[in-house]
Length: 195
Image (tube, rainbow, N blue to C red):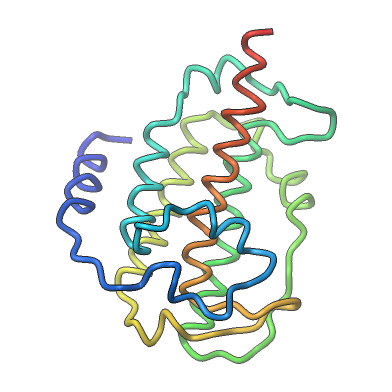
């Protein structure tokens, strides 16, 4: 990861002229995913929210994560490496959904088993750097996709096996999903270093 990417993202946040596509435009508000959407600050439109999530990746405390290794805060919980790959895997699935919805595909899309994905990810055999590099690449692809959608495309709705989602709701869900997991890392994993 190079600092030039960080400078580009910082400059993009400062120069982006937001349209009015913030959380208030989400309709319908998806009942399950609102717990992630609500994590995103109300004053951020979607593109700046995605850009901020990229900055947050650069600002992760890698020394603490490395010090924790494969430690978990409770039996059966994922390691931080598994969490990072879970965020990337989930983003790939959800971005595929957003693509189909944006293109007016009316197919009802299936769910996925996040625990099966984590069990078979091999995340703990990889370096932290490789996981962060992959997650950044996935997030950059998300940013490129969303930056080129019209407001009409953002408001298009599609169906999954259990809910309706707008393309806009998917974008905010992805940002909020990362915030959710980073809070868990801060609140439940990092304190383990003091015990």
